[in-house]
Length: 535
Ligand SMILES: Cc1ncc(COP(=O)(O)O)c(C=O)c1O
Image (cartoon, rainbow, N blue to C red; front, side, top):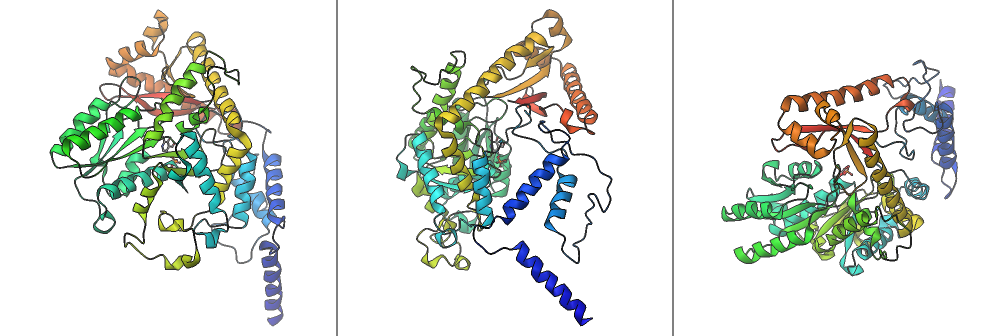
């Protein structure tokens, strides 16, 4: 009995040494990563498809069975990785395949991947510089790079990495609350606080309104014009009513190029509206202006591009489109804060890799736990840290990986790399949108969008016959015929479902696009469904 225990103990020690190698820079986990990649290659039915289709195995102990219990004795890493690939990786998306147009998630740049792996290998926490060594510097360098993209002094801007677009909206909303009610951290959010959001806002604006205790009933939606841009006149009317009823407007959350239509709001007009309201009503607070630019920020790469000389030889067919969108995005410089997601679109980073950017970096002290008497972060032992962002961050544990990954992406691509990528996306989108009505009985549902996402709907027979296929005629038909719209929405859903079911046994054959049940609302509030092609 004693002997057996010793044997077990020996095994444990051997295993522990293997699983937790101490030498700095050993390549044991890299070897296992390599092993995992070769398993993935071996198990994939094809080497390069939009969806990964893994060979099918019977659920047996030998193949891929994992019990819903923690085993008494540990299994070998190779066995676990091999089983995980077989059991979990079927049906995952291959974001690097150009035929995948499912969503805005980023294909990962190998530089970023390597850097995030290094950060994870050493488990670097970007809590304070006692934890992080010099890694907090990566976040600061990126902050300066962001300042350059909008021509603001580098030391004015301060940025924080967090868990994505939802987090940057959360930071902005929390700042908006604290700016108007400095003691909100102690007394909670008063019931007269309102925040303006847009009708094209991502749902996370409501998530955050809910989580921060504002309540979605006090998120006021600004109506949009036919292009999807938020109407300043509507915001003004609604703002006046709130203020005259003793309400407080903590902030305006504007579009910085959201999904479906990629519209960027007129930020400067909203800044003017804010000044007008402050002056006329003698407001004692300054409503915060945040632009949700987690997708649209990429156009800022065109800052200082010589559109006249056009050194990248961008086709004149799309150069004006890019310039128009860039000029709108550049106005982000007038806002108080904005968001960047490196894990979306062309950002090149694994998820989550989001950045909250404050154009008035000093405002971040309004989030300070210590200065506002919220709590003492003594658990983190940052007493000797010169730099301690944990005093203002939402997270306590925060990996250095995202900041390093983002730096890897920015440095390895350079501005011209991003510009070329974006140009290719816009060109492909233009060609795609031009081809659709000519070759099919389908219609582009967002023809005015300046971005690289195309919504596709089925042309009603009435339009097909008249050969007058465009979004306006589609809209005028379905807006007056609810039955027709329901029918078309159903047809599209059935088509997508048919493809989904048909390809379940071999995901590699699945259509690259995705389906949205509600990408547009008619003037009577009815939803229009569409296929979503994010090129
Ligand atoms: C405009 C916009 N804002 C916020 C989000 C939420 O981002 P995340 O999923 O990184 O939290 C998204 C997600 O697609 C988005 O498109």
